[in-house]
Length: 122
Image (cartoon, rainbow, N blue to C red; front, side, top):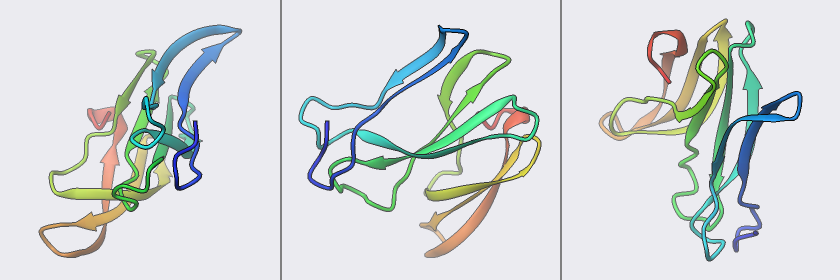
């Protein structure tokens, strides 16, 4: 589905040799309240696949939720971020660390937060 912003809503499925390991639908019934895949990247050790999403309806356009697939646990979950932090993008730093750029509501400015995926960040 495509919302008014033109963003396609997505279902993310991670599979190995044709077998689905994890899947999650980010779709909505009206095509305006879901999310579409924006971009993703494997960590250097290939344990985690991190990806962000874009709103399909243009609601909260700077909010791009982060999700992660943990290969050891074979599950998809949202990345744990500080409260009052609205993520906009991310970049890998080390094997299981990423820097997340976003808006700090408390500080009223863009800032970076470092997330350690291996220590419960996912």
